[in-house]
Length: 234
Image (cartoon, rainbow, N blue to C red; front, side, top):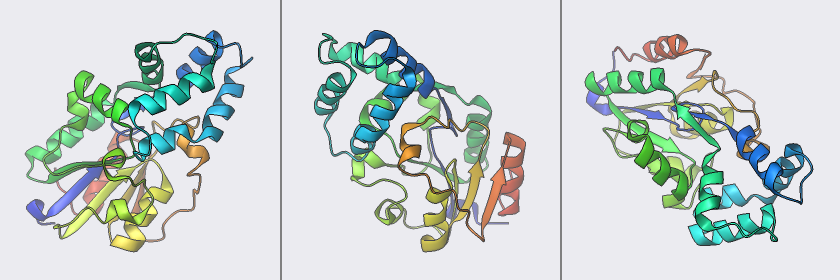
């Protein structure tokens, strides 16, 4: 049994607390742009541009990102910023209610619960307004766009301080490995909602698994079992 007030449980957002739908985003752009014949061709262009990862890291302001996205989609199209924001939001699906309920139960049980996410300011604003339960937390949360650092860079993990133990739930092995191997965290790989077409997977595609303090959860029930393995009772 862990000390509940001194054990932090961190959740990723995309593919953990929120479903992703990058296919809808790629398909929408391919359907309105004269530059791409297929959604696969836009997917490749978007991933290779690294626009999203730069925006996640806070290297681009929202207006700068939207200008670059407009140019990438089709400079001949007179797409407004609001139209581009809506199209960009298509990447985000519905909340994963079972995982959100589990997060709430952890909070009610006295554990500190935070969010640890690579995300953009536009996504954060969209989710906060439409799905506030996703980002509700009882402990300080760390977002990449606010800190100019992306998982799996150690700088982002070093912002988590003051806890005797940390358990981190994410859908990417490399993100978990930094926490486990460099910071002594526990890691749970959550697999049911993974979107293989997610753009940042083309950048962070290392799937080698940690050798210790690591569990795989292929369902919400598995996630509860993995939490119990690390001494977390809910």
